[in-house]
Amino acid sequence: MSDPLRLGIAGLGTVGVGVVRIIRQQAALLEARTGRKITISAVSARTKGRDRGVALDSYAWEDDPVALATRDDVDVFVELMGGEDGPAKDATEAALKAGKHVVTANKAMLAIHGQALAEQAEAKGLALRYEAAVAGGIPVVKTLMEGLAGNEITRVMGVMNGSCNYILTRMENSGATYQEIFAEADGLGYLEADPQLDVGGIDAAHKLAILSAIAFGTRVDFDGIQLEGIERVSIEDIRAAADMGYKIKLLGVAQKTGRGLEQRMQPCLVPDSSPLAQLDGGTNMVVLEGDAVGKIVLRGAGAGEGPTASAVMADICDIARGLRGPVFGQPAVGLVNSTAALTKLPAPYYLRLALVDKPGALAKIATVLGEAGVSIDRMRQYGHDNSSAPVLIVTHKTTQSDIETALAAMDDTGVMAGPPVALRIEEV
Ligand SMILES: NC(=O)C1=CN([C@@H]2O[C@H](COP(=O)(O)OP(=O)(O)OC[C@H]3O[C@@H](n4cnc5c(N)ncnc54)[C@H](OP(=O)(O)O)[C@@H]3O)[C@@H](O)[C@H]2O)C=CC1
Ligand SMILES: N[C@@H](CCO)C(=O)O
Image 1 (cartoon, rainbow, N blue to C red):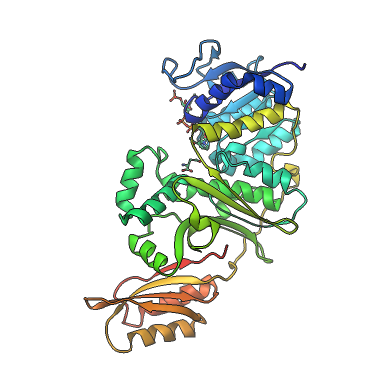
Image 2 (cartoon, rainbow, N blue to C red; image 1 turned 180 degrees about the horizontal axis):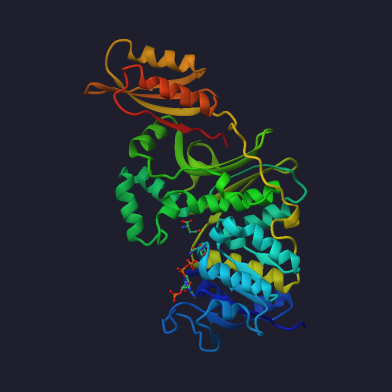
């Protein structure tokens, strides 16, 4: 039997406590599966005395995560504090410098500093693992890096922020406004301490940036993601989209276009019949497309104590078994900068317009669309009892720039009774 694998865990919140619980409750199973005991030497959090519902007396305590990360009796530093910089980054760098493997759930840190940390880890032959950082309990990093290693990946797509999916599906089911459901989600503790990370799409974009690096062999490029959150999704759009056969999701897409890498995180319409449309509440879904395998759909809990700790444990078990491997699936020094696609692949668009109710108004809009090269697929005008006529249009595939040209020209027609809404329709 090999020596025990000794952990130092920094962060004893939702995920940290979950990891401690699994290690205590499943000690025999973990030992049987990895051939080693997995033990905790020391832990760290901000407040030492807090009752965390789990016994911590048998572990040494460190106030300073950096001191924890560099202890002689720690083989693996488990970073579960969070935050792009600060103690998480300082302690991770210190751990790698001291020759410790690192397991983290911190997507913000990896999306911004992943390349430098990967180079630091690989230069010393150390593991830096992060299964929990993307889509919580769903083993998507492992699937992409190992299970699909023989494929050229053509597209990565997914709903990767449970809080946003909760808000959008609650709006759909209740008919309540964004503001009302945002307040409800906040009250239930579903949102990050800084809710903008969720509703601004930033958290989901961190996850997409990581998957994109693995899928396309590029350096993590968070800044290259076209990013839009869910704040402007209105209940009117959710209702109108449903009427046209779609659901609205905060969808991340990374794909090769032939002229660069397209990466975007934005509210999109997906057809009612697609697996993504069936996703309710806080669940996550990732769709991976490979040239040999075709399409793989992974679905599961993207957050929460058990699911996230499950993913952290998968990484710890791999390290216990002696598995290392490059951080993003190929040596970090060989990863290239991605070339951002200047134009996105064409797609159908959903337009919701409020028109002044007078003769020729619709004809003017049809002309503007035609002149911009945008072809109408379907159109619906609703009955109305005031002077503004609600019109929905689904276009044939078109480019974003043609849609933007058409929207700009609509302003000059004199028939718009309010600002137009345009959302991309993603074919899944
Ligand atoms: N919660 C989830 O479902 C998921 C979380 N993640 C990621 O996992 C990580 C942890 O998240 P989560 O458990 O929810 O976070 P929590 O806020 O629940 O816990 C954070 C922990 O870190 C400790 N901490 C914060 N700052 C310091 C510091 N300076 N020194 C020592 N300890 C510190 C806190 O101490 P104290 O308790 O004393 O305040 C707390 O125990 C994050 O990177 C998050 O993005 C990823 C996927 C899902
Ligand atoms: N705020 C995140 C937590 C998990 O990363 C979410 O809602 O998905």
